[in-house]
Length: 285
Image (cartoon, rainbow, N blue to C red):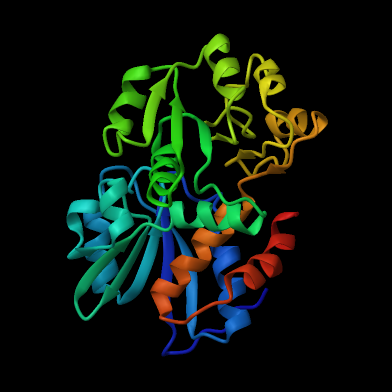
């Protein structure tokens, strides 16, 4: 892919630690080229604890904005002049726009997940969701589901106290539970959607699911979603597919959150489903 640079080209990037593995430059520069925009998207390693220092550098260097991944999402929150509703709700920022000497913080993760579900033909509104994990991704997904009208979201985590803390943000919809097999089986039996927000099954991650038999308790036809996109089919999704369930990996969420971020950066309205379909082959889908 060729990226044309002019003296007027506006700079964007992704920051993180680590970040050199990120697919964001490939995704964003492909969209920029397809839309004929005068931007370039780079990758900038920024060590933990240096988000404030980077923000000063980005403003000085004339960046139009940047995306942030771990461990900077929460550190950026108090540095913003303005926050969108989702960033404020999740307590984290993944998209920063720099305009007229002000910095604006957004979070497109939850919206990206919700659009991926709709794109796959599943509307979670009024449904009972079982969600595995209570980290940053789980926070965005569970709170977006609550915000969009899910009937209930049960957050299963080995450290129940962490799930309880998350549930306090929407106690009428969210409820905590353990991660033991008996609990997972009981919850799966009445679920309308199962979502894995843990790193279990991710390429390069230490942990894997010890036992996937809880999937056998799911009612027929219940969709199973895994936010992981490397590999494209985790052991969880493979087993769910064998049992006849529709499955969704994390690729669509990755693409949609990137598309919505570019809309914030540029002010350009993008046909998100069409763009996601265009981008998917870049990542092997």
